[in-house]
Image (cartoon, rainbow, N blue to C red; front, top):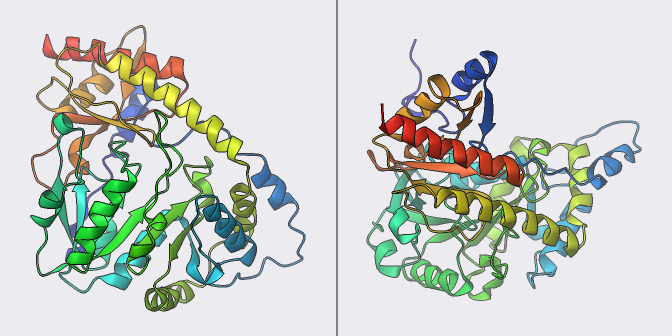
Amino acid sequence: MNLSSKVLSMQHSPIRKFNPIAQKAKDAGKKVYHLNIGQPDIETPPCFMEAIRGFDENVIAYAESGGVTLLQDAISDYFKQYNMEFGRDNIIITNGGSEALSMIFISLLNPGDEVLIPEPFYTNYHTFATMADGVVVPITTTPEEGYHYADAQKIEAAITPKTKAICCISPGNPTGNVLTLDEMKLIGQVAKKHDLWIIADEVYREFAYDNREVTSFGMLKELEDRVILVDSVSKRFSACGARIGCIAAKNKELLDNLMKIAQGRLCSPTVEQIGAAALYKLPKSYYDEVRAEYEGRRDVVYEELMKIPGVVCRKPGGAFYLTAKLPVDDVENFLMFLLTEFEDKGETVMFAPAEGFYATPGLGREEMRIAYVLNKKDMARGVELIRLGIEAYNNR
């Protein structure tokens, strides 16, 4: 009895694979600061549960495959505040952003088709593309250049006759890179020249710092036939477990065929959609408050990180992640040291090794990703422990 070559080619999550080791450290009495996973600690807005409690139906029935109209309309109104017009017919509700990406890849890729993704990238993209018999082709970036990839020459060098799409995560996971509208236009010009789809993962859209304006590929009317937006309540509203996302697009042929997949899985959860609709109706002040909190955390993390001699990192512009190159020989070995041998006052720290965010073998071995999802005091202590850990690790 054999498993498929498809599943055997996939990898385990670099974010979660050290969890059992961290648990052993906690069982041994250590306090572990979890900077490894993008699980926000900010409270989910109460309106979500209030809306669910107000759901007054005798039967929790199937929703329409494309989504509950209440939620579709709420998302449509949300986009309008950024001068983007997506009606009900342009929006398909999904089981989180993950299902949205899986559905998109299945709809676009034939066996062997290629999708361009700047690396390092969110690891599950590899899983989603592989599930669709596609091939991830990385556009390599470096910490020295701030993981910049909006360069026509760099993008075109990765294009082959099999290239079908380019994925842009902005603000980005794991790097925090944020595309300007001009950079989006540049990528759009390359996509039009080579007839590529643009998959725009914008689930961190509002988390753009230093007075950066919110940007979206959906703002560019000249690209509306090829742009596919992915959205989600997980990060923006600190509602990861609700598993509600959506696809927003203007290409009618694509939407019609995406609906085949949506109908095949029946629907997204009915009650969670009711709660999500309330989230999308929150006022602009909500985004301002949350953005200010994460920006403050980023500043604390970056300030502490710059105290480490030899670290390479440019201050990220958005999301709630920071990727940096550390002065160690192997970040995975260093993390294992932190969890099994190191402690300071009974405490240690955990992050995500960045090698698993690269498709190119051997890259990222000296890099880590931090998720700044804890309060400022804990974030500062977590990075301090990384600094102290590096000193102990390199002096062994």
